[in-house]
Length: 89
Image 1 (spheres, one colour):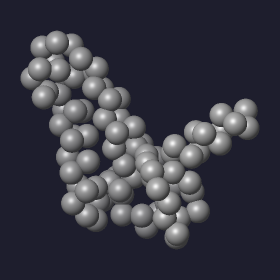
Image 2 (cartoon, rainbow, N blue to C red; image 1 turned 135 degrees about the horizontal axis):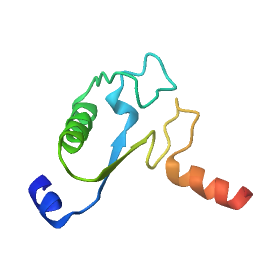
Image 3 (spheres, rainbow, N blue to C red; image 1 turned 180 degrees about the vertical axis):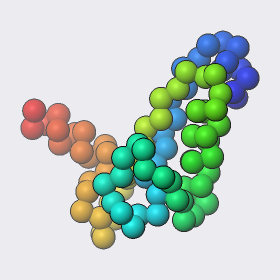
Image 4 (cartoon, rainbow, N blue to C red; image 1 turned 60 degrees about the vertical axis):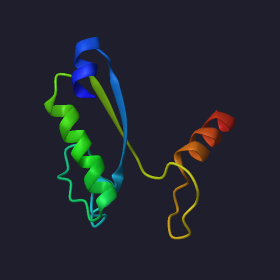
């Protein structure tokens, strides 16, 4: 994928996750050191590293919860959050 993206000058948007962090600190910043605790987080972090090491123009979006609801999580997923913001504003 990286070779084709570089050849065709394609801007890649990678939807990553906050699962690249272990969750101990919370309120992570882009500059915080990742520490994935599962395969999903590690695979997302690995692809982030591939993108940033390449010459590909890229954007990395780290979401918290893309869809669905988790009982222990007070934040809604990104789709419901955007919907709510559009309705309110």
